[in-house]
Image (cartoon, rainbow, N blue to C red; front, side, top):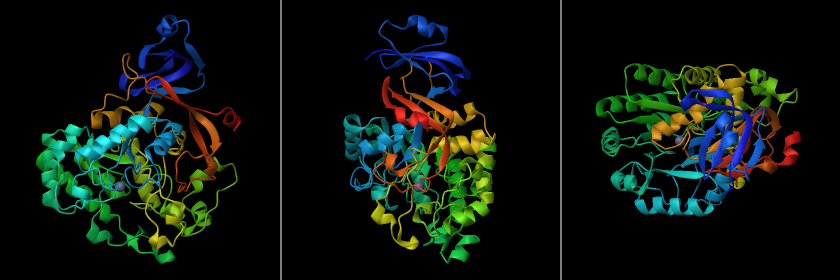
Length: 460
Ligand SMILES: [Zn+2]
């Protein structure tokens, strides 16, 4: 593999508190040098890429991705899911275990690892299940999952309702030094809700899913983290109350962390009532990015149905505030592909979830960096060193000697997200037709370019 020299970029590596114009030399799959030394040390046959005006940062990590293997490959597979990741600037993903069968045993973990090596274009880490078949009744073999190489356990898509069982899961996880990631959802409160319980579900006549249905389990998890000392990570926070619970718990020193997804801090439940209502109400700030031509969609569009649901403007603001003050230290997509025929049904019957790997970086930049809520380094930390630390991955930094997983992106590039250009097997995104700002231009995994912007896109 030839050496690679990235010249003239703004190198942002939060782990090393580095933010300056620098050259980066990649050799033998590792970061070989940064700074004036890089060009001097570059061997004669080094490929040089001018990245002036671009940001060079550690390869982005998305710790919440549904790759749908095994068993649901009509929606996505390791090849297409990791291609979408590379396109979005991600060099590592963590795949969720709610597959068919569920990733609740060492054999299935080995299967994913094997397929990822053969078919994946980015690093794939595996999250194992908390309970057998994600049924919430009996613990999965947590020690065996750890030995097979899982980086965390979660019943994502589902939530362990039995508090005693969750306590035991946390105790085992602590013994095996694994974080427990939880999809916080109280079934008795949520029942068959399909969207946020607020104003719009009444207008639309859809069953509501109250914010308390999430907050209840966030509070439970905090209490159990305090009781057991295990590391608990609350997935995809959507409600203001959840953010406040995590903020207070962290102040007390409870080992709890949290993540947020771009759709929850970009859209609101008004979007389920259609584009006219969204842009007239909660979408005003975002409209500025659309150059006067606002994307349109009808009411009851199932690409705005996800779990947890889009919430109120106040909840969205609380998520943004939690990201800004560090309460929420991780950004992720909850990339959840579904086939067209599954989504093209009445709102009540559609599956929850949207794709997100290709839009996450842009939406994060728009809502956090371009809106001046967060500096670039703090934003990048939430996609790199912070998830790496939570999962104890030897990733997320550009330190000399580290794996050469590198993302080069243009924070100011304006582009249209087009359905025809997605690398995912599915097209259930609410953001097709949107003008986005910020885009990955080169994605490097282990020193190898796995995505480079097409020349025709450079003109967009
Ligand atoms: Zn989930």
